[in-house]
Image (cartoon, rainbow, N blue to C red; front, side, top):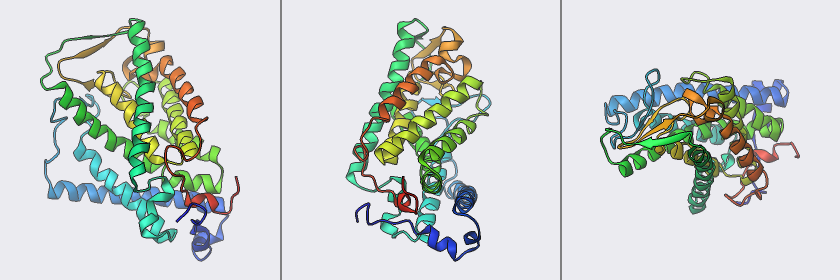
Length: 327
């Protein structure tokens, strides 16, 4: 089924429901809030069921020795993230098939998540792009003498820890992307505008990190700018797989370098990063994402993705784009 054949059916459904009494924009906001509410309930239920059936199966900071977490924030684990991702995908599928009457086999296409071999290419391309961006940050800091590495007594294999962290960070990135730049993003885009979708989801993305350790105003600005980068990437490529790859590559390079990731310390076996540069550039206790070095790199990344051709990193299949708004 081609992208031109796909049509958003939510407006028809809304006309026959209580949402039809309101303007399309009010209805869109109500639908978005409904999506969030159903997700929260579903996530709580799936998490409870997972831990009831598989108690302690994924406990621990990281079986291979690597971990991400802090004294005030529990370590990120597969056991904590996987149920949330399952819930996010369940609710996305539910809203697409039940509310918007999308065929079950194409339900995820409206969010840029087509289940095809091309998805692997999109995600890998995004991963490479995100890795290069953070590689620039780490490289600049190393050349400037703001970060160095010294041996540590942390047990484990660096290679195994890197693989383990990659899996955890992939799941965590997928959760945030599906919830922010998946269905809600496309709904806001169709009812308001592309700019509104990018700005709104980026601000929410920044606020979600407001409680992280060491957060500063500059850190929130950078996280929100990262949201703009990811939002523009979704618009230009039509692929949420690409955005998930960028998000994962960004966090993974930061973590395996032993740097603090959004305020959460990353521990790697046999090596410890020592940051000694100016806080203005290095971000201080929040990590590089709180510094101007990351600001400049993110702006560069936005400029690059803004020039990407639509549909190249993944097939552009947005059901919501034809919902009565011509952009």
